Length: 146
Image 1: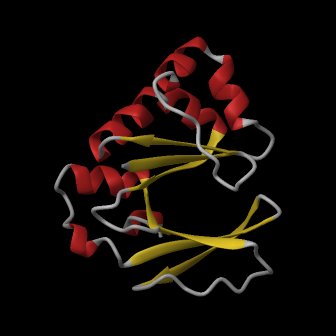
Image 2: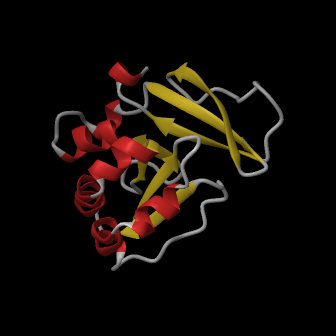
Image 3: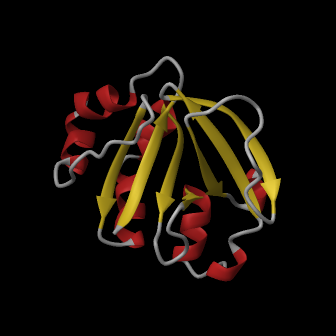
């Protein structure tokens, strides 16, 4: 299963914004919201990468306004490293080979449910050293996002 994770912008409750609107609520109606361990985040599982990207496209108006980032966890690429939405779109469209997706990383520490400042690295996820964390996530990003 492919996972989608959306992190909300500061000052907005991403879950509340998505549930408050009939359009986004209908787009999410067939999915169970998952625990993300990040306070201002929403996550769901979809059957495929294409389904994940279709959901993000359906939610695009809301993501533009209320989300800091949208990420996809695609098991055929990595079991534990997320893909930025842009990189996931490139993988899905065959514009980048899966073997070429592990060059640029955004590493994010999380403490008390809050995402900390990101750390960028090349060729492998750097060890997060910008502060104490409860856990760390790594996201493969496109060169233009680096």
